[in-house]
Length: 95
Image (tube, rainbow, N blue to C red; front, side, top):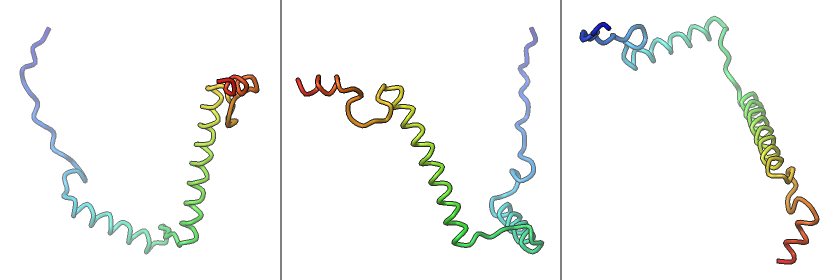
């Protein structure tokens, strides 16, 4: 078995990681301006933003509804509020 007691020098950050946050922000801003100048970038208007938010909320609600139905199915009441069967309702009334 070899004994590696030598420690490697810590790696220095490269690329953007070696730059300060202000310099990174300036480079990103230049890229954004260039993209808009070339017509490659897209700026959302309020209608597009609203439509995107509505789609996001609909997808989240659909996912939450599927999870709720799955949980209800696992619990045995298949998403129906109240007792799962009439027999259980009678048992609860007797209590």
